[in-house]
Amino acid sequence: MATAIAEKSRIWTELDFDKNGKQTGYLHLPHSVTRSAYGTIAIPLAIIKNGKGPSTMLMAGNHGDEYEGQIALCRIMRELKAEEIKGRVIIVPAINLPAAMAGLRVSPIDDLNLNRCFPGNPNGRPTEQIAYHIETELAPMVEVWVDLHSGGGSLDYMPYAQVITSGDAKLDKKALDCLAAFGSPNSVIQKFNGETTMANSAARRNKTVYFGTEAGGCATVNIDGVKLAYEGTLRILSYLGHLPKDSRLAPPPAPKTRWVEIASRDYYVYASQAGLFEPKVKLGDNVRKGQLYGLIHFVDDPMREPAEVYFKATGILSCKRHPGRCERGDCLGHLVSEVKR
Ligand SMILES: [Zn+2]
Image (cartoon, rainbow, N blue to C red; front, side, top):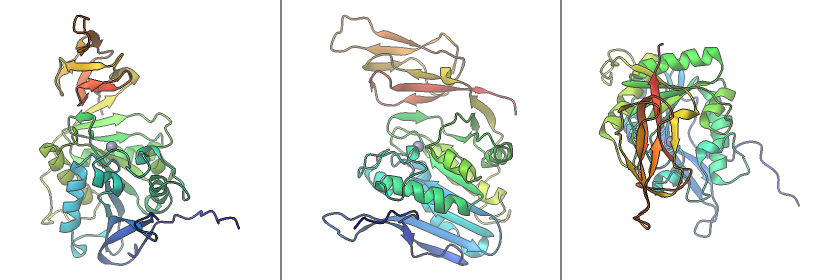
């Protein structure tokens, strides 16, 4: 007999999304393996609800090696009380739990990158099932979805908040207003490029406002990045009307943000060959088109001259490759440039 193909997400929870109060528990992803035939992967979840009002999802751990958002959301999950909010806040601090527990960008179970798996598959590998659950169950329940990222093991970011525009003018205006309220020293606008497998595309398909952070990197914990993820998220809860202005959790007011954009593919720098990359520019530095970014050294052939790497645009170095060794095709960093808004 043929096995029935599920159309509905196989992930389930004992929590009730419509119930008032603070509930903490899990999204259960069925995962049958030798050591646990009827096992599930238990992905932490909080639903905090108090009557009518906005519905917002706070998410981190989309990539497991991006830690600042995971720390900020675990703290907010512990601190937030139902009686002091309005509406519903859904918190998922480690959405791709296997990746988060392994400290990896991709899941160690299926080697998949959640943020390239949308719209997902209810019958697919565990990471595809998580994507499907977000796409068909979680995103449709909220008006705003905050997805906290960082650079992970291979990149280092100047901590900032970011919107990838959707092409829907109404959604984009709301997302940019949220970004201003988030209060990052730098707010990045990245133009929609037709990508369909990332979380922002799931949000677009659901008409959900979507934005997030790049709050640090190097597979470590950036102090400024944790502060930005924590305070920025509380500012958003306040801006959206979940938290009263005089809340005990009210964060400091948002500093004035500098609006920047990633204007073209030329803002990215790629390694032309494998070697040991020596940057000549620091994160946050202003650079010019044609300026030397760094040298790729060949330590197994020391008499060979290093390859020079140049910037193809003018801007601020906002993201830089973290490991010294690189392969041809690796992204060595990218720029942003100031824009009026
Ligand atoms: Zn990420």
